[in-house]
Image (tube, rainbow, N blue to C red):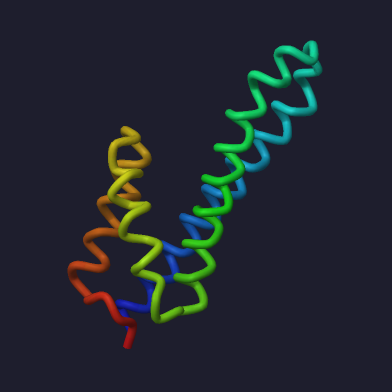
Length: 107
């Protein structure tokens, strides 16, 4: 029961972070017309941000749906995300603690 509570909370956190980053990215795209040269330079940044958004949303959905291979996505993301101080450290540490405490496979 406690495991299910932590899994749902982690899923909501990952999904929420993905949605927040996506909204901020859309606001940035809409409010930054710029020239075509600047748009070409910024396109690599936007593509990398879209990839990170899709990874966060995938982690959240995998945890919320209790997918048996959620740890394959969430643990590497948490290890990388732990270096993004302070929010990433808290979320990454919480996710790693969850998989350490309750194991890799959901019950």
